[in-house]
Image 1 (cartoon, rainbow, N blue to C red):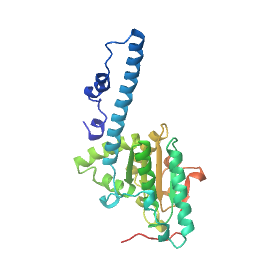
Image 2: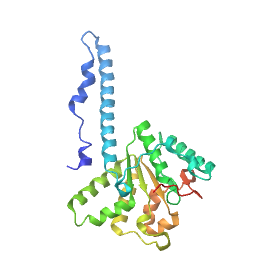
Image 3: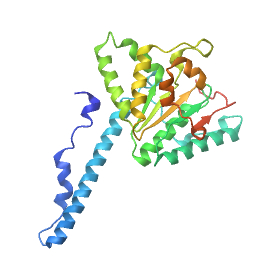
Image 4: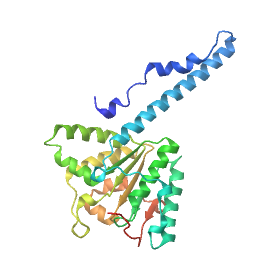
Amino acid sequence: MSDFVSAFGSVNPSLMQKLREKADMSDMTDELLAKKKEEINRNTIDFAWKSIQRRKIRACYKLSIWSGDEEIKFKFDDWDVNKQADVEKARAVGNQAYKLTQELMTDSFNVTLYGNSGVGKTSLAIAMMTKLRDEADKSIMVVSTAELASLLDNKYTQDDTRKRLIDIEKALKEVDVLLLDDFGTEGGAINALKPVRKDMQDYLYRVANSRISGDKTTIITTNNTDDQLKQMYNAKTISRLMTKNKDHMIFFTNMEDVREV
């Protein structure tokens, strides 16, 4: 059984009994006993559901694919507007990301962050996801699309990679909030774009198609325009991944590369 599937196995039966064991119902009337049992059942179901959700959060995050295999941790408090020459622009971008995150606490929609490399797109996307995980108990997952394409290169020669890709695809379809980071870099340099390989196209289409039918959020960071992405991917995939709502687009226009290397 895959790591991802096993993480969603049945809840340990002992967990289901914990709340029941706390109640002393020996002296209750039938009516009070019935009400108490109903309350305990509700609490037990809630307890079990939260246990499953915690396991889902851990399982999905563990399957993240990081650029350079380096995990990034970032919160809104870490967003330093003074790193940018245009402080007001940096503040506006941070505020927009924060407000969208507040909406995503109780809603689901896709968000796209556009801008050049090194301007902070990934950092703010991670901040959004971290807040949703910590304050709304949403499962999150980060996938560098360039690294995903590299994994697909190895699937025909490495058995463990094929298994990993199966687990990752299941998680991509189920996770509450997915970040596709640096989407489009797998299509080559901006001045020499080419269609993305078919197996990558098919893989992401299955994921995108599955996610539109549920209460899922996909956050995308990209250095490319929508027109450029359409040169790389099937229009159906782009339509399912990229938001059409301008209020859900964050533009890092004219912001500077502040990446420390």
